[in-house]
Length: 499
Image 1 (spheres, rainbow, N blue to C red):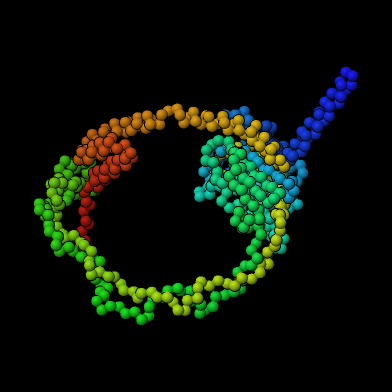
Image 2 (image 1 turned 30 degrees about the vertical axis):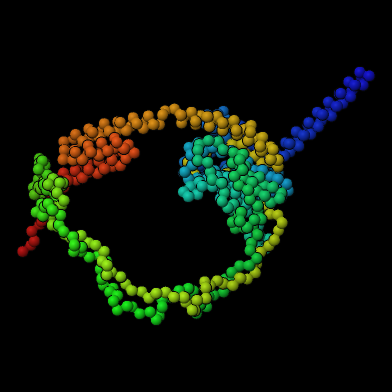
């Protein structure tokens, strides 16, 4: 009996082992393509030989890790590299997941970090001359430059009526993370026409390939289009309002009346110094020793604000202030009335769209290769763990085991760096050193005439640290003004006219 039991257990063990092996084999079959870049890309990936792609790819470790990736090593270059998959991947049957990691180790001000999933070479391309024109099925990944900040998802689809391949761009795509950490981008293409975009495993966008709102232009064209041959009639009036032809300008409408007039009720303030100029010669200024009257003309002392005007309500000739003219009406215009001839905004008539078609599912082209073709102003872009699979669980597993541990280490390091010196203490110390330097500037003899004004500005900045930068700018203007007056305080003599 014991022997029978032992035999049964052995058979069950063998069956379980076979079942487990089959499950593992099925899982591996779901992974169509994977590259961890643990080994060098050389001999496995093909670098484009076209002259415009001068960027050098390197097999490099991710900063702070022992993990390798494919590195963009130089700034302001074009890069192109491609790897063929063993068998073309159909996007028509079942779920397909496109996933890869990228780390912008030096940030990304202007450039792309996306992948192109290429059609078979029969479409007209070769690995050695892979370039921007090489036909792709899908383009996916981050792109940032100027106002552009998006995770692209673009697919090319052949119009069955026209035969033309059209690029369809995902509308309102997710934005690109702006830090320097590792991020994983996932595009899940489902058999029910659904597209899901994940960033770091979190859903950021859900779309439908047949939706007229999710892609631009929509996959299915409109049934009608404006007739390109239709022309607007010459007598078509698009003006909703017109000037009233029966309106007459009122007799008392004065178009010449000025907008402002002198305030006749204004009186000169008591204590106004009519005979005092607003500026006077600086009594402490002296002619520079190297001043040459023949070369530089007669020297004149630089001007400063008249100290007598500081306490007075004003200096120089007093003039009445201006006020708004109550009689001002401006140029007369006839009032607008409804246009009896108005026909609305003209539009060409609609005709059937010769490129219109209907379908239940996109007719995706297969993926035969993975290419990276980018132009970037930044170096340090690292690509890693490029995956194509038919199982979302496989993609999830790679995110958990390959990306997440790195990301958590990087996140902790970033947090530690942010916590180590106190930003408030550092700012206070910088401000203290700045004020000490500014007080020394105020004591420079060259700026003696402006010392009180400079000190007043410094004291205001000490009371309100948030205006420190503005105060520094104001003091810089004072220094430049003093320097200008010192160098160009005199006037050049006027050359005598010929008799």
